[in-house]
Image (cartoon, rainbow, N blue to C red; front, top):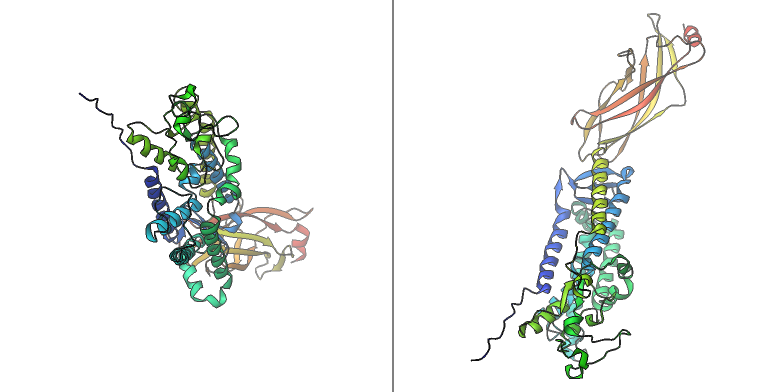
Length: 476
């Protein structure tokens, strides 16, 4: 009776999972700029209106101190991701990789049929054929329109969609916007059609720093030399090309030398050489080997694992080790700082400057001396709608009601994004100090507030100058 052959179940290809990831990420990035809460975007850095929107909270350009913390959060997030999962960002999140996959796998292979199959990414279409030249032109045209959409999507994080299309309609006054969009689109076409994966291998600086972030527990695409055999020696010279050329000490090697893991690699490397900076962790080689070895009833020789587990065979990969916990702690700390700084943002801006004249005095009919202090208030409504504002004076304890606002006498309107200049006169007819040596500086607080929203209010420190006793007597 014949022995029953073991059947190895082939899981869903990593390539298909990557396509799902690209689709979800693309949909998210396209939709996100259109989502607003009270007119605020999740992220918008508007140089046009000098605004920063972050997590649906609007900040003025004077509050750009948040940006360094946001950039640190992004970089530390990518570094932590690399320390844990290798160049998983490059293979699964990077826009360049996603654009290239869309162009190569969808447009060239599936739609136009320029490539015979998706498994050979190193063999370029035969451009000596007239039909392929026509198809190439069509592919570039499709890529150009897709790049314009991608360029527009990118600009929506700097010029929101509600303004973007208005500016495009008024193109005569917005050539800079059209020029930037066209420049980005042309670069994307050059990148995905002509530069291709050379961008990852030779231009992207990330590939140069990734090895510094790796350790023995970092998860990456790895060829199991214990099972497959050493295809290359220590000098990276190929030892054999066919299984019959195996040396006697590696006669157990399971690698069939089918080269499927090589031909499918988009960055043109042989994963069997070991870690290489060109590897973007797209896991195409894992899919290829899984398919070949699966037909033989064996697990893949190329896996997404760590050197600690596959090469050194010391045990299971430790994902949450000290380095990763350190990254997590830093990221949580930055999130707390951003949340605290964001929660203390002011809903309006107010600068107070005293006029060059310290004060003015005038004798009133009732015999009292009126003392006026003049200020220039520069107020900006940072909200998205026109509102009414007014001020209140908060003097020191014991002087309540003795300093009043003489001008302006009623509330005023401020439109969003435009600075409002108001001359404010504070007045008193009371004797606030009997100092004969010099003028008295009385600390006060100015409360500026909106009559339309109770949460739009700010406090500013100021000084009311009261004249010395001799000047007060001379005014009578």
